Image 1: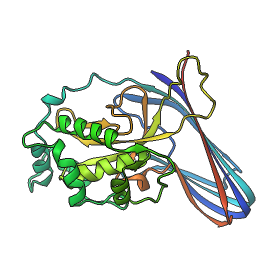
Image 2 (image 1 turned 90 degrees about the horizontal axis):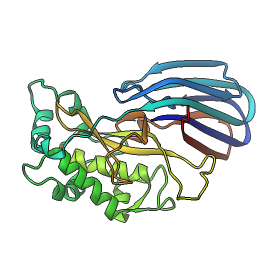
Image 3 (image 1 turned 90 degrees about the vertical axis):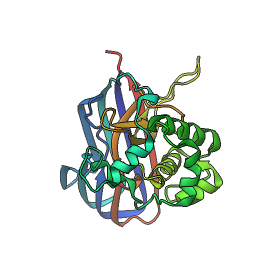
Image 4 (image 1 turned 45 degrees about the horizontal axis):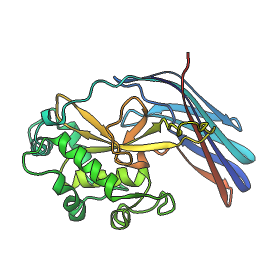
Length: 293
């Protein structure tokens, strides 16, 4: 499936900004199941300095600096992406979850060792007994790991209510677990906390999800949004497998991967530091459009 993606971010500042330093992570990754043959990042006002690098996780980071009085910043990312998902693994064919846990903890280097760093708490995602207790019914002794992941994915989808007013970007995972309400970022981080609390490696994935309006309803321009889900290491044969607790699915060709890391702090699409600004208003509009050509 080929997509044209437009991600437009606009900041309007209460008072003039004299200097702004920003970091953008908006270029979709190139992966075995995904290619991004074309990407363009347009910035207004024009930066005086701009540099691109890959971060620790292989995400493309673009740093830019803007000088000169301005009260509006607009960042437009345009991408052409092709997604071809392989046939999913049979969950029952994956190793027992304890095998993955023990391999990550082993003192002897093995294929699971690099994934082991993603079993620990991170800046935004704690580990602890409450998360392990919630996860444990999905991970009975000897259960294949992907079966457990699918069951946990389904339970979060069933037990938690999608409510954009219940949380914001700073809401702790502990509060989300207690109130059982939030958005995709919250559900992904709760699921990761649960998996890591059992000793399983899990990472936070940011990207896009093509939305399909009901029959007879025209898709609105800018109505799509960034999305978040989870990736879990399931062994040497199948590697990292994605799961989307917001929608209770294993992502397919409708999910477009942009970046991954320990939590949202590693993959935020745009962040920065400014001199001036005062109050600021943020508007984000995303279009994920199937390519007709």
